[in-house]
Length: 138
Picture (spheres, one colour):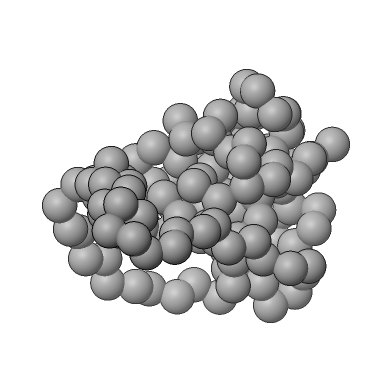
């Protein structure tokens, strides 16, 4: 069974999304709790996870027994990002003759520095600005 992790309990997912190709900013925002919903097979030591934004990001070990759980909530027309050849094979196996492949150009930036971004946030708060975390209403 997959569980949804709230925005304050996503740090255990960091290792699953480490090295995610070309979407560092999106992945950082999801892990930090600022964007999207995320489902995993466990709270503390997850093996697989799916981030849900306008598209779905698969992460973790595609050969793990729980990887098939990630596909149960997908609907026809969903866009799925499969980060590795093994994930692409698993998606294709779950949806034979139902995939449309969209090629994207990947632009690789320097290392995404989340500590620097947190520093900007702290500096703004010290400057007298009111910094609050926005919660998304459901």
